[in-house]
Length: 199
Image 1 (cartoon, rainbow, N blue to C red):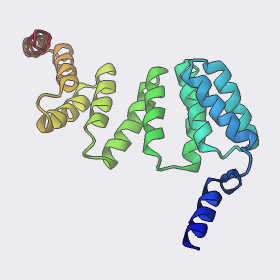
Image 2: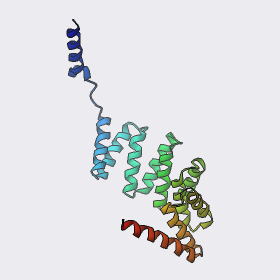
Image 3: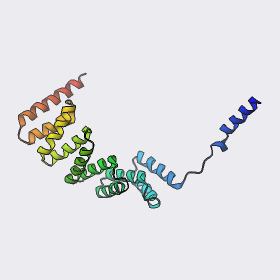
Image 4: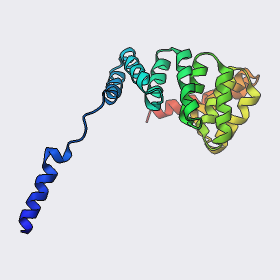
């Protein structure tokens, strides 16, 4: 009897009917097709698929973010910005999307808009060193050295060997009138890189 019950259980578990679920929806297929097209580098076709998904389901955050990402990679910055903003209307606390929006603002040349978002994020995520670096980088581009310096110093206080922060600090020193210290930092970075290559 025990063997019969075990055999019956195995038949049920292995039966295709036991595993059969509902057929995938066209939206699910489109989402996977969009991901696949994106992976192959066919962003135009992937954008089209995600737009079709959003026509039927405007609140689909995953598809909207994928669409915004691809628009930004295609340098369609105004459209990407609008899509990221729509996501933040639904999910205002989405820090990952806020970072992407800030970066696209910077890529589009709207430095003030981008750095404003970075500063807001830095105020919330005080221990995120990369956010401080990104914010400082934009301040350097904007020649706002007094705003960039404390951000970079905060990073270097935590991670003295942080290569990008040291490089940005060297640029800051160079452009703000201290070329001697800038040269020292550039030399130190070069020596480390060249000795690293020899390992």
